[in-house]
Figure 1 (cartoon, one colour):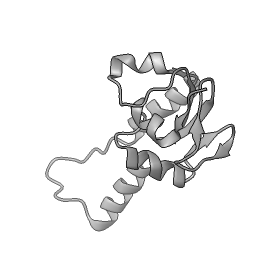
Figure 2: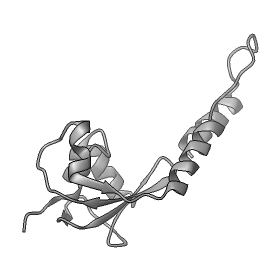
Figure 3: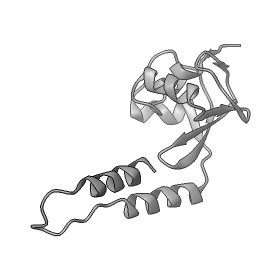
Length: 124
């Protein structure tokens, strides 16, 4: 049975922009395989369920195929099945709506406190 490192697979199916970002997410506890935190070197195989904490939601995907190289966006559905619930995507939409920073024209630059608040909202 064919296997591949989880960080390489996450990068190949475009869940992360770089392989090092995928590795950092694994080390940071944001990626789970079979309900357990994983190391970047953990091997994945077909039919594994992977949970990825990304942008405030828990994204659940199923491995359909193993591919060693990064694929185009149109080919991603051939490699993985998105099992994420609709509620999670609605939650992401609400987070994006709430994070829009509106500043009145002419109020000047944000203060240090304003900047920290903006950064905290973006990170959440």
